[in-house]
Length: 207
View 1 (cartoon, one colour):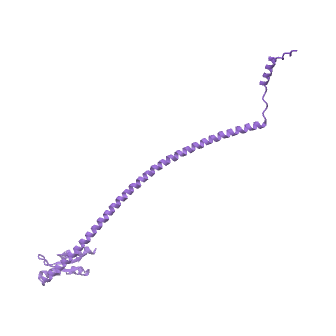
View 2 (cartoon, one colour; view 1 turned 45 degrees about the vertical axis):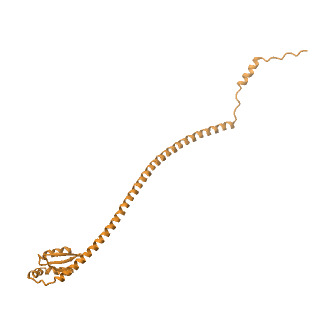
View 3 (tube, helix red, strand yellow; view 1 turned 90 degrees about the horizontal axis):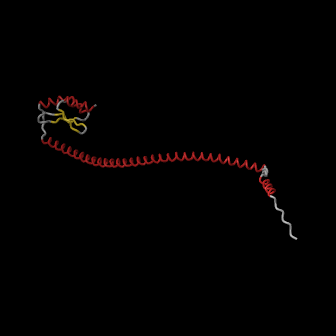
C-alpha cells in the first residue's frame, strides 16, 4: 500500500510567517546597556575636547618653537658679529703691540745715542775747561786798565746777586769788549756785557 502524498505548505501561511518575523519589534535594552552607551558618549566627547586642547597646545608649542628658532637665528648673527669684533680687536691689539715694541726699541737706541752724546759733551767740556785754564796760566796778567775797572764796578750790584746763589764765575775779557760777566746756570755759562742785561736774566731765573 502506497504512502499518502505529503501535505504541501501553503504560500499564504509561509508569507504570513515570514512577515511576522520581519516586523517583530526589537527586544527592549537593559539599563546597563544604556549606561554603557552614555559612558561611551561621554568618553568620546571628552576625547574630542582633549584633542581640541591638544591641537591648541601643539599650535602654541609650534609658535613658541618658531619664536625660539627666530631668536636663535638672531643670536647666531650676534655671535658671528661678536666673533668678528673680537678678531678685529685682536688684530688691532697685535698691531699696537708691534708698534709699541718698535717704539721701545727706537727709544732704547735713542737713549743709548743720547747717553753717548752726553758723554761726548762732558768730555769736550772737560777738555775745553782744561784748555781754557792752560791758556789762562800761559797768558796770566793783571788787567787793571781804567776802562776795565769802570765796567766791573758797574756790575758790583748784580754781581752780589749772583754770588748769593753761587752762580758768579768772574769776568771774561774779549778783544773788542773790556770784560763780560760770567754766570753759570743749569750747567751753562752765560755772558753779559751790561748790568741791566745781567739783572734781567737774574730776575728770569728767580721766577
